[in-house]
Image (cartoon, rainbow, N blue to C red; front, side, top):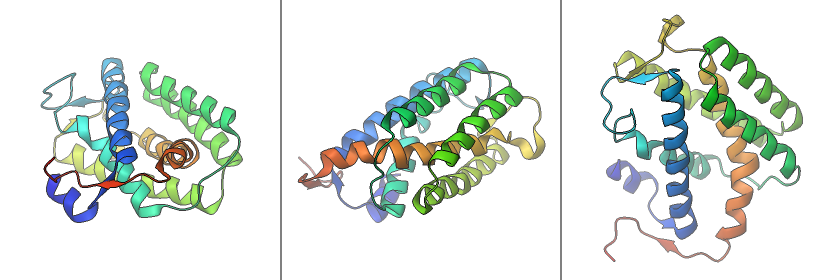
Length: 194
């Protein structure tokens, strides 16, 4: 991961470093809650029911998304997007049934896309769904993790709402927060010695 980071990311701002850590903590908690619900399981868990590498992956995914797609910062509707994001997180943390999870998160994503659907929103959602498909099917078919109930192709369809929702909330919720703090920040090299 450090080699890939060096090749693709180069320098990292202080705000991005803090963002990376916060994202990793958030998704570690979300994964732990989802694992407790039994909606998926890892074949070789190390800590909190997951392999150590999983603790660091979501920060990488979202920094990759930010760097790759960029675009203008979305404005307005803060209360609406916060409400959708909190309901989304609560659904993945508390609903163990795959069909109900798909229905709830699919509805929330649909509402989000009805409200927020400019070309950048659609690019973030679409790209994350494609990225999610690549990771989910590779992970399942290589035996890294599995889903209960033998879903078609090994991956339940709610992966679309998970990854797509992360794309939408990254664009509409997280990027505006980051933009407020990034102005004037110096770049730091994460591999440079202190």
